[in-house]
Image 1 (cartoon, rainbow, N blue to C red):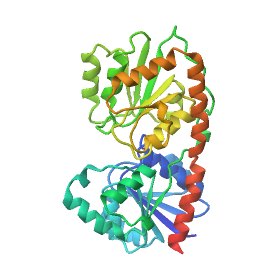
Image 2: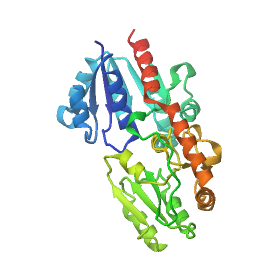
Image 3: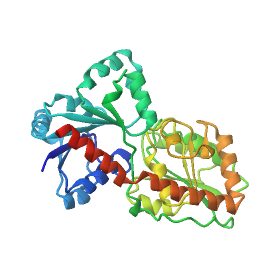
Image 4: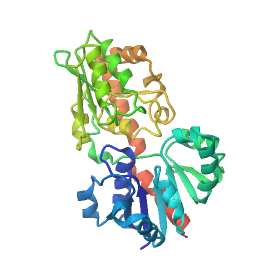
Length: 344
C-alpha cells in the first residue's frame, strides 16, 4: 500500500482545512497508508485518527531533519498552508499541494511572489479548492494551467441533519450564527453592526470560534449596546449541534478560498447568507450574497426572510439541496485519482 504524508500547520477542529484532511483520510484509508506531520499547532483529532491507525508527528518533537527524513520515506507528500508548503519543498519525494485561499498577504510583496512562482514549480500538481482560487493562482504566480486542477472541498453530509428547518417563532429569540476564526479575514464587525439594524426582530448573534480579535469584537458589541445580544462561544467541538441550535447562518468574510462552513450550515438546513467574494460565490446563489462591509444590505436580506415563512422555508430547502453538491465523497474520488496519477 502506497504511503502518503499530509504536512500541514495543525489539526484544530474549527479549521476547514483540518476537517477536510480528516474526512479525506477516513474515506481513503483502504487505498493508502497515511501519516500527518504538523509544523506548528496541536492535533485535536487524536481520537478519530487513532481509530484510523494514522500516526501524527510534530515538527517540535522530531525536528526539521526528522520531518525531511519521514517525507523522504513516503511515496507522495501532500502539502497544505504556509509554512508547511515551504518545508515540503525540502523532500525528494514527489509533492502536490492544495491552494486553500485566493489571497495571501505575503504575495503582496513582489519578492515573495517571484520566489514562489519559481519554487512552487517543484509541485507536480496544485489542487485549487474553487475556480476563484485557481484564477488567483494563475494570475498571481503566472502558473502553468496544466499544473492546476480544481477540486472543490466537500463535507461528510452524514454528520448533519439534511432536513428543512421550520421557520422560527417570533415569540422567541431568533438565533443568527457564524463559525470561524476571530481574524481579519472574517468581517465579523459587519455582522455585529447589521444586528443593530434588525431591531424590529428579537435577534441574537452566536459566534463559534476564537482568535486575536475577540476582545475587539466584544468591545464593538458593547459600544453599540449589543453586549447581551452577541455571544462568543470560543472553541466549539460539536459544530453540527451548534448549527442545529441556530435559525439563520451568515458568513461575513473579506475573502474565502471555498466556504466549507457555509456548506456545513446548508447541510444543517439553515438559510444562509454570505459575502460576494470568490469562493463563497461559487457555493451559494447570487441572490443570497451581500457585498463586503454592507451591513444595510445584509440586514435588509435577513429582514425579508424573517418576514415571510414561505421565503424562509424556500431558502432552507435550497440549502439542503445545494449542500448535496459538495459531498466529501466526490472530493475523495478526485484526490484518489490525482494521487495515483502522480505516484504512477
